[in-house]
Length: 337
Image (cartoon, rainbow, N blue to C red):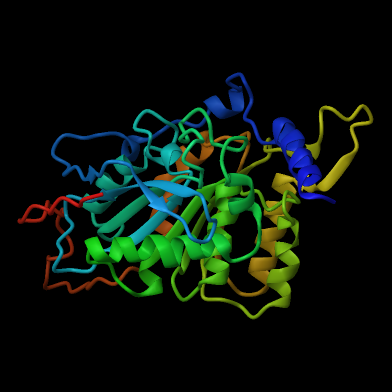
């Protein structure tokens, strides 16, 4: 199949399968954001740097827009943990379904996750292509289909070899893989898993919501690949809904079922393979559709689980780790683009 034919096939399928319902469903409306997703008085608020452009060598001619959340408790004298979100605009949106920075503010304040620098990165695009937005994930206008869905290590090179050195030059970040997590939704989720799969020396934690472990670019093979490979030191949280894309194309008059295009079935297969190989894996199966309503409601608890054993003392004679964590005493120096 030629590149043009593959692209045309992908765009046609994405138009049917990858968009969320154009209406609010009762199933999605049942998922509500909790207190951990809101802003609260007295909770130190981290700051988000301006968006900037990262030139790309792995995909020549493209660049990646990214910004950085720096928690109020960040102290350059102490290495921070790191978490990187694909389709960053969707997780960062303060009025959106995820509101990740609010969750980080509240959980760090209560010491339920470590002091973590979060990076929000968007799919690669050329200089003339539009920036991603909360309403357009860039499937048809960026390099997202190739970067996120392919199983090779090129996107891992973007994250590990191009982005992380920039971060290391600006912030004091732990060099340990156990202190690094990566996350995404839909194609961003399989991208996050693929980065950790190729570079477990850099990422030990993966958060996957409505993950596209389907035959967009061969992602349906992951369960078999997991079973056939040596277990890697990766902790994985999978979230999906029974109303996710279920492998029946509305454009097919015969309504034929294709399991390779059933998002929920493929997530179940991922869970089975990871469990059989002895991975540290957790999951939530709800009734959500192919959007982030369910994930937004679950995000605080998913983060608590991923970071549940970050190093901290538990001495009954020492209250140091049993108090609310206030802002760092010294202001964080501004980072330049």
